[in-house]
Length: 335
Image (tube, rainbow, N blue to C red):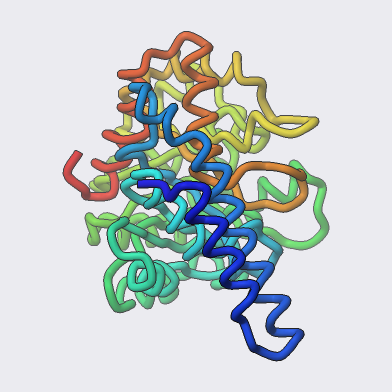
């Protein structure tokens, strides 16, 4: 239940009038509080619309949530986005970071915001040693067991470096059309821990198909192809269907279709979902960046994404499959 405007304003001004901490700390804490309560105000205005529509956030799962703390600025803290999600009836969030495992963060956020399932994972970038078996094994030992997703390299993938023409050495996944041994070992580890989700990260379409096929052959239970139509994968319909044939779900994210120079337009995104089939797809926001001003927080962004896809002819039933049923199944939650 979303608080009413009077309640929110009362809490906001009470916080402002009673905080007696030293000036510098006071400013930091007030900025955080104001960010949270403004977000609640914005979402409160949409609460009636949620109740009157079959297209709503109740039971939804955001499969890619960037938040603070991170090594780069993010728009909102992890516990604050969890509060907003819970207020709007969302079922779960998957916290991610390009820098480190978010398994411990998920544990802490669950304690701070009970009543919503929060998961983490690890992106196999250079800061964790790349395709580092030890890093994933340590995540598996983390209290709570909420480290659920293993992303192949994202911002440090060789393909990512190549597309953006970055200097330095990225993390290799394949050589001469074959997966490197470390990639195969990682797939084996994921297969031995069936609660884990293998996500493909920002590798090339050809590498995605190699990883997905090998994962399928070695018995990985849950496979997700990240943003198949985005600037890094650029998968064809035939390639998407090949990944689906090997048991993968395709993840479509709102971040790909926003901003002045989006990676995709919403029409081609919707057409891609129709070609792949909503029964093989999931939704996420991939929100949290600060470069684009005036973006909504993750829950509102997910609702906007759902509404935009519905305007493109995707049924409410299919949107619910992608935003609720499929991600719940992948994360081991009862749909």
